[in-house]
Length: 177
Image 1 (cartoon, helix red, strand yellow):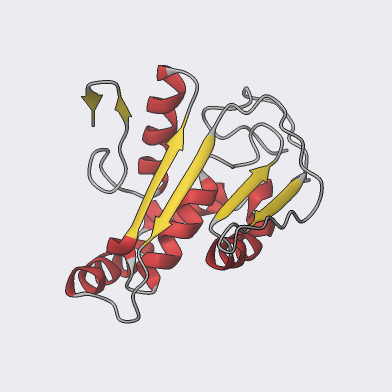
Image 2 (tube, helix red, strand yellow):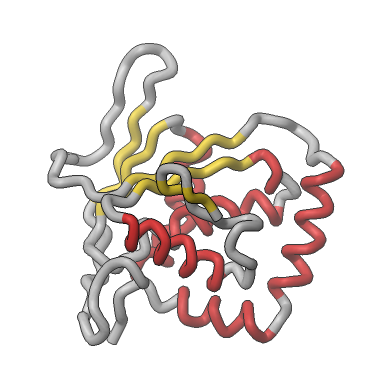
């Protein structure tokens, strides 16, 4: 049995093993390429990612890489990783990373609790940290309600074994952490 990921799904909900679509949209030359059908159903959350292009890691990027590599070996990180690895989104990790690398806009559509809000961003950040490029990543994950925004941020911070407000945080109007 797989359970919801904090903001979606209730305890005991069984999740679908299927991610509906990973859609690629490329607007660099003014044209759109949509891979697979995607219809705008009621979108409740979005993730925007900007990775600053650079060939070589900066000093800060290398420091973050060292810190993250050390953190990955801790029992608390390994325990959270084992929980994260039960979510349906894991099987799409490399596809998500490749798609985000190759396309400026990516839409991921999946069942509630599959890991769209919590896992996709972590996959991208973790890979950037491993590559020494963690300081070049900026992500925004929008949520429809205050409780969803704070709970997603708290969940991701917990899963990253990070204090809320350091690498992971939230902003709701004038409140931020």
